[in-house]
Structures are given as C-alpha cells and as structure tokens.
Length: 139
Image (tube, rainbow, N blue to C red; front, top):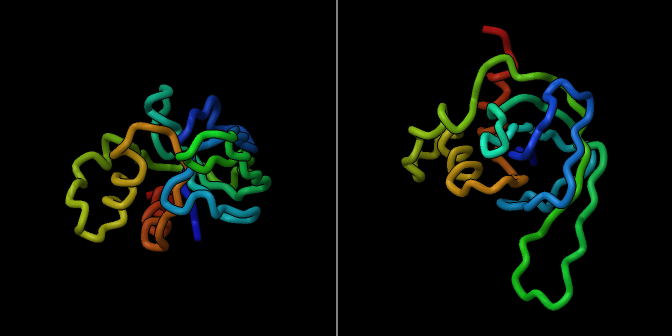
C-alpha cells in the first residue's frame, strides 16, 4: 500500500521530513518502513500541496492516552525524499472533484485529504498513487 501525508512542511527541499504524532485515517496506521509516501505541504500551514515523494525510513506508533475512549491512531515517522513534484497539485486543483462515487483517483485524494481540513497520514489506492506519479514527470 502507498500513503500520502498532509502536514506542515517547512522546507520541501529537505532530504528527510520528520513528522511527530500524525493523525492517521484510511489505513494510514498500517504504514511500515520502506513504504512510499507522497508529501503534501498543508495549505492550512502556508504550504502549496504536493511537494515530494519519499520512502518511510522510520515509523513508530504513538501510544494511546489512558482513560480516553475514542482516539484516532497516531504515528511518528521520517520520510527520506526521493523526488520533488514538478507540477502543482493541491486544494485548488482537487476542489472541483466532488462526485465522491466517480471512482477517479483525484476525487479519492480530494475526499481523503481535503474534505476535512486536518493534517493526516492516509492510505491511498494504487490508482491514486499512479495519478500522483504524473506530478513528478516533466511535461
């Protein structure tokens, strides 16, 4: 499985991105070392959307807090950057894709990343990953 993370990214040029206690959704909690991760710099934090692709180089589940019944699983992870995006893809480009049942990879990304404004780590389909790969090729 492949993943995408939407989080604060201070410098997309970094060789390694480190994220602490990230909320997981859509099977994001299943990430393992070696998995591919597409990195979106959160527009909520001043970012521009898709900035990089990388490989998870460290993953650690964050223990749940005792006494709280409902908790979203969280993970801390490091991602070694393997490529920089060559084309823009963010909230602005994905916003028109709102037919949640159309089966399109862009719609999947809009739903999982932007329907809720929170930063998060998500699992994505093979089709969504193939769609994202196009944003790393020169036109």
